[in-house]
Length: 251
View 1 (cartoon, rainbow, N blue to C red):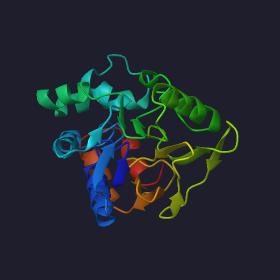
View 2: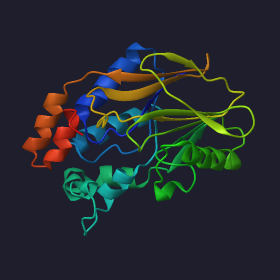
View 3: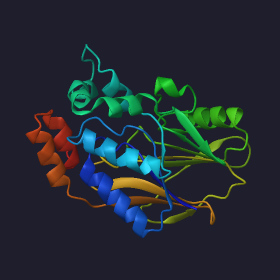
């Protein structure tokens, strides 16, 4: 089974469609969305409509912090992501907001666990950027589901891979775009798929990951898309300039 794992779409319809098309060309048989479908971008209703349809066809979807914000936008603006939450809320219809509100925090399919942030207290939205955070997340996942060998997440807008080597310590592995990485199930693995809709590493390509469960291989992908059109749509919507500049590699 080839599973395309897509995180942090952030209302970027252009990037979403590019990732879906690329993953299909690469043989994806199932899609999994790792939260933050909305926020920042100009197409929240269109993105949610698209992913709702994919979910009806078997795609897996978990909730992200921006999905929760879109359902209940904050009255007090504390950080940049809060600025567009009320606007996003208004773009969605009642059915879309209700669907977002009922998304699960985690989903498990066989030995793969999906979570937006950390499996350790997923509602706290802990970032998994280093070995210690990865170990907490992986340990929590395996404590709850001993059969889990892969934990896939997003939230950090970066592509990371960690695995448990000899002993109990986790080690980090630096992935290279497009390269097939052996991820045998006798080990335990945690990875973040990067952001499809809002990369923040100065590169404009959309990110996702493709897991081949049959061959036990993982590929981290970067996909070009019309980021200029996505940025222009953000500006036309009157959303903060920073949201558009990020899509142009100015993060």
